[in-house]
Structure formats: structure tokens, C-alpha cells
Image (cartoon, rainbow, N blue to C red):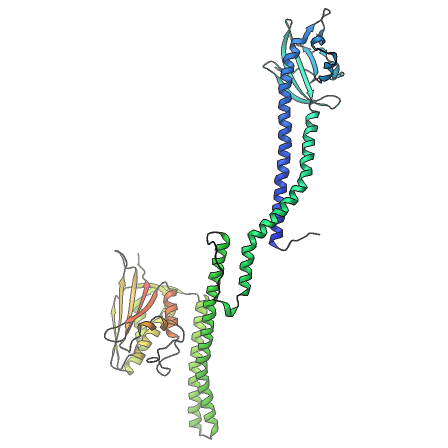
Length: 474
């Protein structure tokens, strides 16, 4: 059954202890190996020195055998201090001498090619009784006779010392792991404390306290970056929430009027008996209000789909002047009723790549506003001019629609693109719409990489300017 640690402090501490334990275990193994290697090197140098001593102690006896001067030692018990294993062979590999310490074992068997010829030849092996030894071989001339001397010492004491060190460090390992776990846990708590504080502050932020922000102590580190990200999220949530509140308030206000009109017309019509023609007028009035309500809902749905990214633009390349002429033809009837003149000038060949239907909707909304708020007999000027911010081919095309209406105050020129916004002195409900045409026009222009703004016209009126990226044919 697996144990799952749910909080991040416990998991980080566990990972820290596991990694520390693995590193400590690797250190223990490395230390023991290094000690064994160093002891073996010391043993090798000791054997080399002992080999030089042994070469001076060997001699041939009168009967032709090889022997070792035992009288070299000052006291007989000194021989007990020596654990050397010694073997002397002739050039044919025949054993000339073995000391009693070998007890009949051989130090390596047959001769190896060039064994001991160029210095001291080391090798590790096991005797017949299983004792591990380090053997060095050296070619020597003994009284004009070439011989091979093999000298060895047991490496078992080296292994035991390394095992003792391993056992000692292994006993220390649990204590080190406990200390590391305690220190790691305290360290993790200290590191995650700012995150815990941010979580607590975030939990206290509600829909009524979206204006609160998380303090940023150090914007350069990861926690500071997280605090900045959360503050950005809270700011966007606050803006969205405020927009939602305004939108809900505006929609409820806008829906109340047509619904009240429908109800009022219906109640008045039910108070008295009427003939068929009167009932037809009443129903017509109700349907007119329902049509306005339906148009507003359709427009709101269009804006909602546009802001959510659900609308896929079907872009084609076409001459913008052709679209302008289509828009002029649509609002031309309204302009004729008010005896207005629509003047169109500009570049006939300026090309754009856009969704023709949505761009046409934006253009018609702007032209409809110009006709609606301009006085009778006035002139509405539509100009289309290419432009560029640097020498070379045109980078954009600018469409300007100038009316002769009451104009838009400077303080309201940005708000006119907000939903349901209308100027009281000029945009009444009877003459104006729902305040949704300009927001749709703004979205349609910006969705194609352009921008739209409004400025004052002289001596009166307003100029709506649209800039769109132009297309150059190869």
C-alpha cells in the first residue's frame, strides 16, 4: 500500500531527504573506495621497498639452493613481524625458493611474458586458500644467475579497514538523514511561507473586494512573479466583473423600455372594444417593439460571440471603394428622405483583405449614424486615401466619414464605442438606436488589424476615421 503525502511541504522534504541520502551513500562508497585505493598504493610502495631489501638478502648455498639471510634481523622475534610472501624462480619457471609463510602456495604460477623485466610488475590475485594478495614481480641477477623474485602481501587487512569505515559511516547515515529531514522541513516552511501568505490573502478576496491586491516584496524572484501574475488576474477579473455589472444594468434598462411599451400597448388595447383595423394597428405597434427588441438581442449575441472569439472571419481581398459604394447604396434611401448628399471621393484601387460581411456591417453603422444625426439638406463626405508611415508603398488605407451633425464632445469620444452609450443631447431613443452600432464597428475594424477613432469636424459635426492594412498585389 503506497503512502501519498498530500502537502507540498512534506513532498519537498521527502525529496530532499531521499536526494541527500543518495548523495551521502555515494559519498560513503566513494570514501571507502578511495581509502582502499590509497592503502593499496601504500602497500605497493612498501612492497617495492621490501623487494629492494630482499634482493640483498638472497644468496646461493653451497649445494646450489637459494636461501635468505635470517641473521639480518637484530632479534629473532623480529621475523614474526614480517608477513611477506616470497617466491624465487629461475628463467625456466622452476621454483628456487619459497618462504614458510606461503605454506606450499604459489604466487602466480607460470612465468608471464616480460614479467618483472622493465621494473616492478604488480597484480592482484588469490592464493589457493582464498587469501587475496598484491604481488609484485622483479627480474634480478643473483650471483650472475637471472632469477625472478615475486613478493606479496595480503590485502585482507586493507579490506577490513575499508569495511570498518563503511560500517562507521553507515551508522552515521540514519542520524544524518533525520537531521537533514528536520532542517529541510524547516527550510521548506520558511521558503513556502510567502506562498502561504499569498494564498491566505487571495482567499479573503471576494467579489466585493476585487480591488485588493497581493503585496509584492521582490518582483525579481519566482514568488514575486507569481504575485504579479495573481494581481494581473485580479485586475482582469475586476474589470470583467465591472463590465458585467455595467452590461447587466444596461441590458436590464434597455430591455425594460421595449417590454414596457409592448405591455402598455397591449393593456390599452384590451381596455376597450376596437374594430379590426384598430386591433391591427395595436398588433403592429407591438410587433414593431418586438422587432426592436429582437434586433437588440441579435446585436448583443453578435458582440458576445465576437468577444469570445467564436466568430471565424472569412477573409477575401477586394477593393474597399466597392464596399463603400455598397454602403452608400444601403443608406442612400434614408439620405434622400432628408434631402442629404453623400459625397464619395478617394482611391478606387485600394485593396484590403477582410471579411466583407462584417466590414460592411461596420461601414453601414457609421453611415447610418452620419445620416441619422446630420440635419436635412446637409452633406456627408466619405473619403478614401492610402497612407504610409515610411517611404515606399502604402501601408494602410484611411476611410473618413464626416457628418454635419451636433458633433461629439472631446470627453465622450472614447466612450461612444462603449455598449449602450448615447449622448443625451443628440442620441435620444427616438432618433438613436440602442448604442450598439459603434461597439460592433470597433470590433469589426480591430479584428482586421485596424483601428477606429473619432474627431471633431469644422465648423460642426464629427469625423469617424478607419485605418485598415492595405494589400499590395504582386
